[in-house]
Length: 237
Image (cartoon, rainbow, N blue to C red):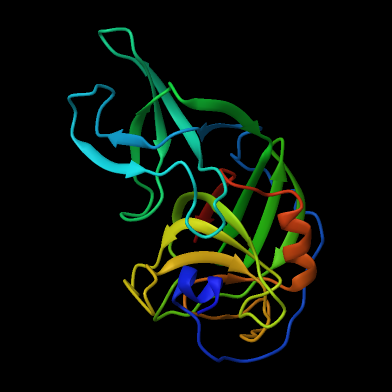
């Protein structure tokens, strides 16, 4: 099974054709200039509150499953516990969509990214922001009404390079988002990705996918040269 089929579990044969829009989007936005990230150097227990006695939500691996890339999580808050331990509230991969938890700051490396992707479902566009300013806008294929692209605050889990024979090549950006309709397929978890049009097709500007965001090869090549693990992705109506 290809990496993308395992990753997404959402793809089927659909219409063909592609286009891309590179015009700048100058509209005002609430996208922040930068995003703090935490790169994990060891597995972490994500907890419901910033203390070790709090409920454990899940164990976050130090490496991603498809590429073995280092796990990088967006940081949304800081806290210090009564015993002096430093904690980070981070966005977490997987279900439920958009969930967060607290991890200890120890065994993490602080990073910062100026990049932020916004998917606008109403206009079927992906906008790339750098330092809070829109730099590129791309036309995209989004989820059809029966399998919509989920909305919320997500992030890139890992960037996957695909061979020319694989569905969605040349690249996929695997997101922390999961389909709200497809819970499982072909052993995958219904993970949402941004990926190419190869062997699946679709005309950018239409809504025909099983939840993923499809972009042409030139666009995906531009994105993966700049967008890596931890970069926030906001999907809006």
